[in-house]
Image (tube, rainbow, N blue to C red; front, side):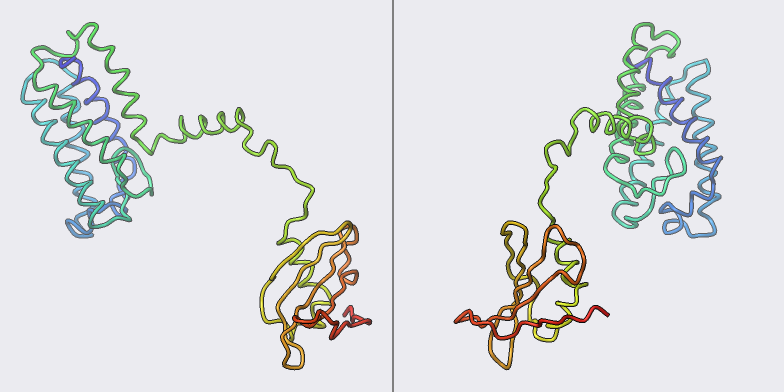
Length: 268
């Protein structure tokens, strides 16, 4: 297992270096401008990519030297420290690790760096090159899957399709169909009606209560009429959607007597 690690580390570093060389302007989205200054951010970014590429080639090509694994440990420690710094000091900064991405540094990115550090630490105990690892190479499949799960940059390749598949299986809206008119739809009809304009100046609250009775929905608002506390009750027909079909009456709160009921409602 230890001997197999340089293969995975080398491939990850090559991928990381390729992403940095391909989009060097990504440095401006990371915490590098804050850490080293805006003018030096991109050169430092390119330098890190060069170091990654050289170390990756050293890990992938024979001969195998212990110093290569220790260099990978040092680089992993640097990655982890930089990501923690980014998370704490510049929380809106992106990782800039593997490819161009605007996503801020998250715990998954830090976990990925720690996993890289763990694999590099394991590689320091190897006594042979990865080409001699034999069956130990099989463990790289599990480790590569772990790296993929911790890489937000790869979510669109596996996580989003998995979520879509789960939605197709679970039918999250099954059984939620309803023939009841949503209250917000009724409220919009009321506000756009001539009846509402006729009593708008009397209203002193939003919708206070509502109930359905056969073909009508009744909606009440707190109101005041000639200084008296009152309730404005709108009658909204379920079947007739025209604004002029809505009626309103203002009733006294204590006695229930009708104080005002416009009979002719302007439609303009």
